[in-house]
Length: 394
Image (cartoon, rainbow, N blue to C red):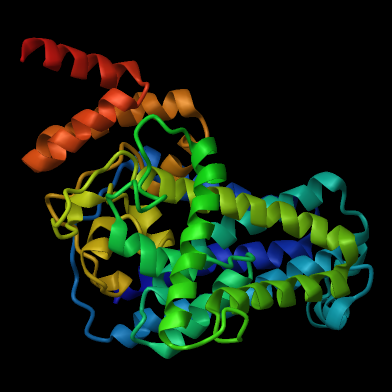
């Protein structure tokens, strides 16, 4: 039973705790941020538990129900975040809390400071990225299931995600390891800030081209409601319109901070998990073409996202992703690496040896040739110097 409950317990503690913190007000609104660092990062750094188990789930609907449940709770969380910013008692939430629990939520809300609101914004951003975005990523990848696609797309709408469900699923998943085709397959030497700006533009262009080609094949106009990217924009704008209506531009401002935090963490996960890996043309995608991680807590909070190599290898639900022995690993957990990516000198110090190990241990002879070229062009001394020595020997 624990194999089911562990995903429920910690994710619910994260989402529900953050949701309640917006009602409690004050320093409590930093709950989600504190949980991220103390539990999400601290647990794995201290205990270093690596989960290599591959349990069988005889009732997979329980695992699927968690994703839909937590998406619904994310809607509740965002609603209470907006209530905390609203000039009115939105939906009578404050009065209801006082009537049922005796807690004067409206009085506490009136005492909130800018620091408290920033805590709420950062907390919301972290939970949207680590929980809601990862759920959306999982569900939109299930292209065979209309309900999953529906829930996943709305999960992304909560953080104004408008392109991911198209480019990531139909572009990145086909072209992983081809940096000339896939902007998420990061070239060696590129830092996170290049990736999250120029790379984001490339992702947008790729996603739009994919959708235009799909519509053309079906004889549809790019301006029709069959355009999934336009529909994603409409969903995102609908969410924003509700926030502005309920909490004004102040509420939108703090929401904007939250979605920037979520976007940065989302792109950092894309960045390090595919950094520097190349794939030989014609070689099928394997678990070795993505950096994975088996840290216990991070994978529980992120629905086995760390077993990313299997996710790319074959489209299976998160609870069926296995801990393959030949998956190249990141130095730290996925959540930790996301934050390390923001510090380029530290990131390169940690990842250059990992990428070099990938070249020698996981790459095919053809991929080693591609890697040598990438190293020479990287601008990183530890890469290019090594290639210069190799050239001199030969």
